[in-house]
Length: 385
Image 1 (cartoon, helix red, strand yellow):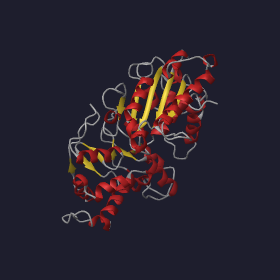
Image 2 (cartoon, one colour):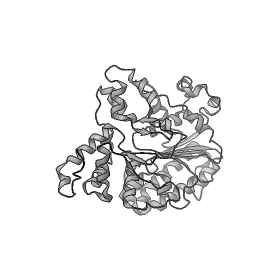
Image 3 (cartoon, helix red, strand yellow):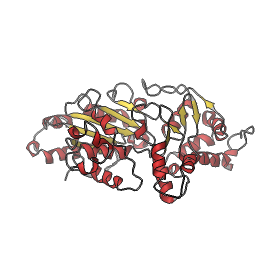
Image 4 (cartoon, one colour):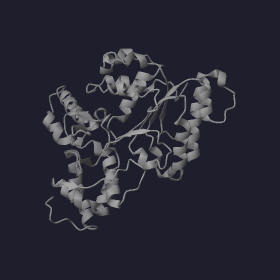
């Protein structure tokens, strides 16, 4: 049974999502992605903070494009069903779906990691194209070319190895692997990647320069599909009676789309509505410890600015454009702020940094009041915590 190619996993995951009481129809993104298929602009990379719906959208796209599971019964009733390009691409493609956070059961080296990916794709191809079994090919791209077919590549967590010390020495090798697999290949009808880290910051040189990237700081094209808009959040609140939109807004909005519209954290909103209580949900998903380290030791004097933000005082800063040329940050302070924006702990709009919502505000207040800080940094006495 195939593990990476033409599986039913995306279909099943999206089907379950559609059954959820708090499902939000984001299917119009499909119309925009349809315009990229079979064009020079067919390489897309979506980099947003964790829990902003990247994998949910990826599974929706897989359910729509994949030829293995007929999905008209799902999509006919969604917004995409009324679009002109809907029928032309529905269930028309071979899908190669890679979740790059999957590690081999035995061995943990980079070579084991890449061998698992290459070997599994090879096995899947030979199962789907038995006429190619036993033939010798110099490389995986040569094997894919020999199928004389086209594939849509979905790559979830493209940046997995960049956030794990185990593969620190193999970053360049990994980027070269992706470049060689995808760039200018006739078998690629579309390549759609997701992650947290900005691809142009971590892919130095021209390794993955074929990708158009859409980030939390620079996305006027896809931004409404990642996070809940005010209108979507109001609609969700109307499906229950315990929490009002004002209560949800106080806790979970504050991220801003490119045009200034508010975006709500999807995970936090849904868990609050399910549990009937606003509390801190998203900060339990990872990376908060790293932020607390920045605060504890006041690295780059970021603690002073966080204190200001906790007290609702504006902090203006020029964030360099880390999405071009792969340049390093001009100072450690800006590097820290960029990481905090990328991971979703700060919001940045029109030159001003802010803590995006009450959920995170309470976490920062708690951290700043922690006695452990007093032993290593001077408190900012001029601000009332």
